[in-house]
Amino acid sequence: MSGPTPYYITTPIYYVNDSPHIGHAYTTLACDVLARFMRLDGYDVRFLTGTDEHGQKVEKSARSAGMDPQAFTDKVSQNFRDLGQLMNFSNDDFIRTTEPRHIAACQGIWRKLQAAGDIYLGSYAGWYSVRDEAFYAESELVNGKAPTGADVEWVEESSYFFKLSAWQDRLLQFYEANPDFIAPKSRRNEVVSFVKGGLQDLSVSRTTFGWGVPVPGEPKHIMYVWLDALTNYITAVGYPDEANANFTKYWPADLHMVGKDILRFHAVYWPAFLMAAGVKPPKRVFAHGWWTNEGQKISKSLGNVIVPSELVARYGLDQLRYFLLREVPFGQDGDFSHAAMVRRMNTDLANDFGNLVQRVLTQVNRNCAATVPEHGEYTSADLAMLKRAHDLVEHLRRHLREQSFHLALDAIWEVVAMANRYVDAKAPWALRKTDPARMATVLYVLVEVIRHLGILAQPIVPASAARILDQLGLGPDERGFTKLGLAHALEAGRALPKPAPVFPRFAGDAEAAKG
Ligand code: ME8
Image (cartoon, rainbow, N blue to C red; front, side, top):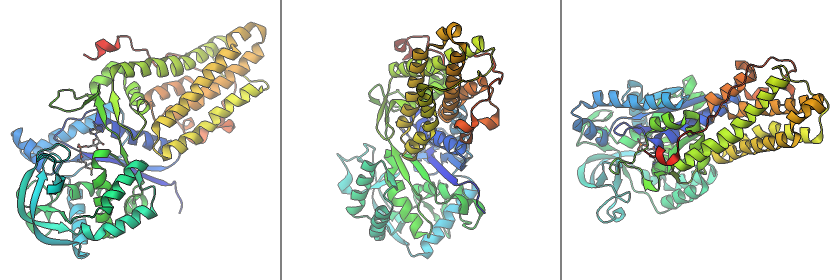
C-alpha cells in the first residue's frame, strides 16, 4: 500500500505562563508555511503545536494568579489557540500536556527507560533555575546566576536519574551518521562539542512540588518537566501504542522546529531518551534565531513585548507573515522594526507583487473582454518568462528542504521582478492598437506567470494568494502544485472576475505606528 508520503512537523509546546508574543508566532508560522507547502505538494502532513503546562514555573504562575494550576492552564492555554486563529495556522492537532493521552505516553516512556536500566534512584544536590526549568553545574554559573541570566536556587532532594553519561558515544555516532539531524550547521557544531565535553546523568524526577506527571509506582515523584514536554511529540501520534497507524505512519518526525534557546533539550536529551526507550529519534531539529524589538531583548519587564494581534490589526495578517520570514535569514537573529515592516509591506507586496497582478488583470479585464486571452506564437522572451515561472516550484522545494524561507521568498520575488520588467518592456497597453494579437500573447504569458505566483505564494500569504487565484477564476482543485506547468495552462476564453487590489499600502507613517 503506498499512499502519499507522510510529513510530520512540530513546534515547541509553549509555556502557558507567558502570553503569546511575536517569538511564539514566528516559530509556529515557519512550521505553518512548511505544512501548507508540503500539503500543496501532495504530502500527507501532520502539523502539531500545543502548550507545556506542567512544572514549577507554571505552578508558581498559577499560585500568583490565585488559581488552581489546572484551572489556570485551562484558561491560559486558550491564548495559544487564539494565536493560531489570529495567525491562520493550519495545525492538525493541538496538544496540552495535562491531557490523559499525554500522561499515558509519559508513563509509558518512563517504564521503557526503567526497563532498559537507564533510570536509577539517587539524590540530587545542585542548582536549579525555575525560569529555565533546567539544572546547572556549579561551574556553569556566571556571577551566581544561570548562563542565561536566570536566578538559580539550591535544591537537594531524592530524585531519579537518567543515565545520560552512558549515551555520549551513541549520540556522537548518531550525529555522525545523520549529518542533517541538527540545523543550521553552526548549531550542529555547538551541540557536537557540548556532547564531546562529556555528559552528566540527568535528574528526571522532582519531589518538592506536585504539578506534573506522577512517576509510575512512585507517586511522591513527578517527572522532570522536560522529559514530560518532549514526550508530547510522540503522544500526539499515539505513543505508547507503537503499533497504531499514526505512529507507524508519522514517526520519526520529519522536523522539530525550535528556537536556539532549547536546542540542547531537543538535540541531546531527546534522542538519548528515545534511543534508550527503543524509539527512533526524529529526522531533524532546526534551531532558528532570536527576535529583538528595535534592538532590545523582548521581555515583559522591559515592557516591549510585541503583541501579534496589534501588528495584524495595523499591517494585516499576510503582511506580517511575509515580513517575519522575509526580513531575516532563517536561522539568524532578527530585529523587529516598524520602519522595516512598512518598507516590506509597501515595496515588496504593494508595489511589486500587488501592482503586477493589478495592472495585468486590469488590462485583461479592459482589453480582452474579461476573459483569458488567446496566445499566438511565443517569442524567446515569452518562453524565458514562462520557464522562470515553471521552474520556480523546484527552487522552492530546494530552499524549503533546508528551511531557507528567506531564499524561497527571494526566488518568488525574482520572478515578480522579472514579470514587472517584462510588462514594462513589452508594454501591452501600447500594443492594443498596433498589434492586438501580440498584446493578447503578452497578457496570456503574464496571466500564466501570475497563476504560478499565486499558487506558490499560498503557503506564505494564504488569504491574499487565494484572492489572486479567485481573480483568475480558479476552483479549489486547481490550486495544488500538480496544476503547475504548461500542461495545466489556462484555456483561452475562461471568464475572469473583475480585478481588485490585493496588497494595500500602509497609509500611516512608520514612526507614528510605533505607538
Ligand atoms: O521553551 N524570538 O517554551 P517557551 C524567537 N515549553 N523565538 C522565540 C522568542 C524570540 N524572542 N521567544 C520565544 C519552552 N520564542 C518549552 C518548550 S518543547 C518540548 C518545550 C519561541 O514558551 C522559540 O521557538 O519558553 C522558543 O524556542 C520557544 O518560543 C520557547 O517557548
